[in-house]
Each structure stands twice: as structure tokens, then as C-alpha cells.
Amino acid sequence: MKKALWYLFAGTRGGENRVRIVLALSNRPMNANRLATELDVGYRTIRHHLDLLEEHDVVESGDSDYAKLYFLTDRFERHRDTFERITEHVD
Image (cartoon, rainbow, N blue to C red; front, side, top):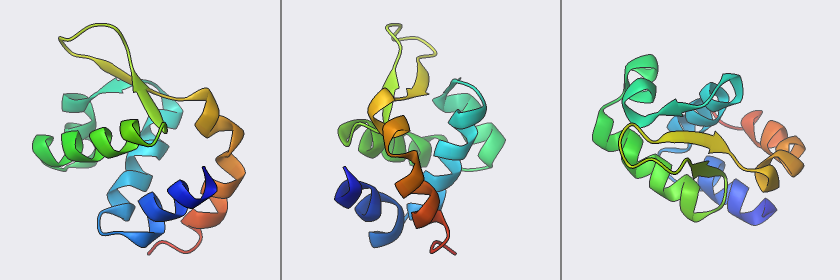
């Protein structure tokens, strides 16, 4: 998981937006549209980042297809200290 977190947040383009998504979801679950509005990022860009985060088990979605809410996974929460260290290196 640590390698995946470094890859997602510091090793590739878009890491800063993914950090912002995780920080927003730390406050409360949100759907993609709400994240796009809150972060002032295009909906398609948010969806792309959510797909990557979901693929790497950082976020998970609720059961509903309409206005699907995203949550941080328990696995991510167990590695939050790594995430916090990584964010110190992201501009």
C-alpha cells in the first residue's frame, strides 16, 4: 500500500488533486459532482482521479449508482500516516 500511495500522490501527474480529494473525503463522504464543485475541478477530471483511487483501494463507493457517495477505505485509514508524510512532499 505504501508504494501505491507514493505513486498516486507524489509519483504521477494529478497527485495534488488526488490529495485534495482525500482531504475533502476526510471531512465527509461526497459524490463526484460535489467534489468537482468543492474543489473547482472538472467533473470528468474528478471521476478519473476517483477511478484511480478506487483501483488502488484508497476510496470506495456506496451502493447507489445515482449520486454515488465516496468514502475513504479502512485500508487507507490504516496507512494514513504514510499519506501524511507524502503530502509534505507534494507542492
